Structures are given as C-alpha cells and as structure tokens.
Length: 299
Length: 243
Image 1: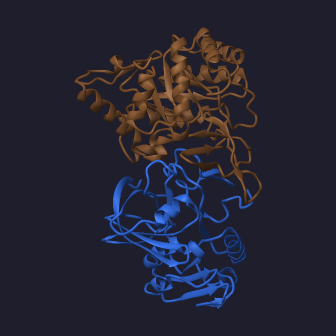
Image 2: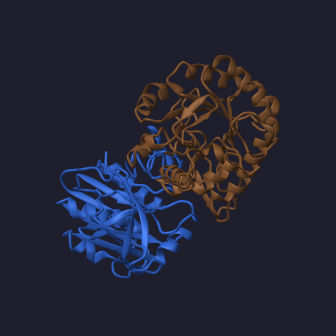
Image 3: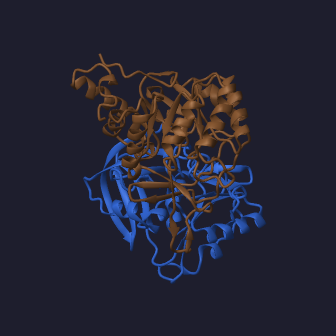
C-alpha cells in the first residue's frame, strides 16, 4: 500500500503536491472542475494587509515553454480572506497555506500575527514577488531575509515557510531563514524577466519586469533545489516548471520534501491530481511504499 | 454554478471562412449558454496557455468556435484536421444576461462569434454585423434572425462603412455588442445617449479561465474584475475603457 503523505516543515500533508501561490486562487475556483481535496495543499493567492488592485493589463505574456506574468499581487486583503475565503477553503479537504507579502518587515509581522491566530495550517512568506513596484524587499539578501523571518517567527505559532527568489545568493538567504527560525524553504519563485512588445517598442508590461515560470525554468529551479539540499538542514519545497509526475519525481530525487505546481495548472488544469496518481503508480510499480527511499537519491 | 469539464474531443471540421479566419467544429455533447467560452488547446507544453474562444454555435453533435490566426496557438489550431483531437475546458464565463423585449446584437469582425447563440435564443433580436472586408457566416444569422444588417469597410457584401455608424439603438430594450475597442466605444456612446442598456463581451489574455490566476483582470468602476469569471460580459458602463 503506497503512502504519499509527508511531513514538511511542521505540517503533515496527505501527499507532497501543493498548488503554488497565485496560480490556484483560493482553491474554490478549481473546485468547480475537480475534487481539490486530492491536493497535498493549497497556497493562497499572496495576501497583503490592505486589498490591492494589481497591475493594469496585459498581465500575461507567453514565451517558448514559458509564461511571464505581472499580476501585481491583486488580492482582497487579509481581512476579507479571513472572513470570506478561509471558511470556504477549509471545506475543501486539503491543507491551507497562507502566502503573505508585505511592503515592509513590519507588515510581514502583522500579517503573520493575524494569520497565526486563524485557522490556516501554515504561513508562507513571499520574499520574492518580482513585479510589485513598491516592493523593496529583496529576498535574495540574507540580512533582509533574517530580519523578516525573525520578526514573523516571534509572533507566529504556525509552521513558517519562506519562499525565495531563484536569484541572488539563494543559499545564504536560505541559511539566514533557517537560522531565523523558518520551518521550510520554498525554492523558488519566478525569475525576473522581460518581454518587449515590438509593435509598441516598449516593455510588454506596465511594470516592465515580470516573473518567468513554466517548463522553460524547470532545469534551473531543479538545480537551485539540488544545491540547497546539500547545505540546508531545513526541508526544501521544490517549485518551478513542474508539469508531470516525472518532473515532480526529479525534484524529490533532488531532495525536495514536497513540490509546488503553478503554471502546470494552466497547461493542464488536472495536472496536480495526475501528478499525485503518477507518483503513487510509480511507487507501486516498484514495490515501494513511500517516497523516503528515493528522496535525495540523486546526490 | 455551471459544471466545468476538461476533456478531449475530436475535430469534426476546421474550415477557413475568410482569409485567416477559421470555423472549428468539435464533437461532443458540450453545453454553453450564449456568450460563454471554452479554453482550447491541441498541443502539450508550448504555448503554455490554452486559447479562450467564444462558443459560436451548439448542436447535439458538437460545438463550434470562430477564431482568427494571430499567434502560435491559433496557428496550431488552424492546422487541425477532422479526426484530430484537442482538449477543451468549459463552458466558462457568465454569458449574456437574460433580457426581455427587443434586442440588438452588434458584432464587429470576429466579434460576431458570441452573438449567434443569442440570435437563436432571444425571440426578438435584430443583428448588426460589421466586417473589414468580405462578410462571412452571415447566412447562419439569416437562418435565425429576421433582420440582419451587414456592413463592410470595402463595401463588399454589405453597406459600405462601419457597423457602429449604421447601428442605432432607438427602439431597442437592450443591446449586446462584441468587437474591436473603437467599435465598442462608439456603440456604448450611442446607447448611453439613447438610454438603452448595453452589454459588451470583452477579450483578454487568460491563463486558467476559472478565475484563479487573475491574469485577465481589467479595471472597472467597481474595482478589478476577471474577464474569465466575472465576465466576459459586462454592462458597458462598468469597464474603465481607457485603463
């Protein structure tokens, strides 16, 4: 009997496949299509203290096997989330991870404090949104990571995950998060990238720089995870371009405790349940009961 | 809430009805209310996103879509032959509002796509179709609506000019419009002056089609709205037309 459940940074998940923040709304949108209780967990759309309208259109731009986005953290704000979205999310039958973004370290602390008193299962700090003009937080800078994680840790009883950018000194940033008391590291967010609208002769997005995701970044995201796992004690949650169970298995063999799927949901809206089933079938076919035997085997 | 499905379906027909404009018919007992759309794809990873296409027509054997070849996705769609498979997510979006009385349906170019199902379902609908060149699929509208007015910028197959110039909202209880931004603005101006409610169907780049990713959000007077979920049909006063 295959058991896909995993313990990740203080949180028990029924399986290691999580919907990445910003790609799965608050889960209810996809619940019209399938039972999202099949997921290991759902990271919410990035939440801020106040509602944010996000960036003007266009917000999406395709590149070969990749997707650039410039959503700009549109969200209803943490209060509306707690009152309207969270009760519905709790009914979905899967773990709820609140992804949060602050303009300042103090905003992160305030968000973490409020959510720590709520019914969410874990909190993920988004230290890496590539396309918010006001954002001064640099998740690749270890001192800033340490400060934010430290502030949140003091007020947060829930498992605390830290989502890092794939750029900057990722290892040092991850180690700073570890020392400051994080429970897991998500590696990684999108890559800062650019598209130019050649008809208009200017960047495709009003905010110029966007975040690149999708299969185009998978080998780089995998390398980031592989290198982090060698030096980090904290569990790593792999994220970047995963669209199949084979991709997910690569991240697990690189040492990831869990994976997040983002753009894969747009390529195939049933992507996550297919990955979960694919992992279970692969293990069963090899007579293995869980993923412990293969996690990190590629080192 | 509509039940949404994602499933494979066979292509029945993929016919070029005008240069670069295709009518794609897909097999299956699909459902859709007038004005709804599907996300279609006939490839694996690249391009990553499916293409949102309005339902043009629906019958017991299948569903059809009208599209123009604009980029890689629509070019790949245009190469499909009968018997090929694609994947369809839908039906999606809110569709046209149920209205009573006399209704004008105004479509410009590909904007005629979401109007045929309305023409079929609204008993008293007059149809105004505008084309840049030679008109296409006008006969489909003539089968279901008594009055079909056609314009073309070249004068071929219709009155020379723009449909927004020909159209007058006088005497209608409501109007539905879909087409290029300039046309929508002009129709909106006339409807506003005549005091006739106008509903418009908007287009935007989309990733999930389900309201989750916020990739298709447009600014409206009531705040940001998702074209895929809160739309694609909006009251014309809602969107902030100039961003």
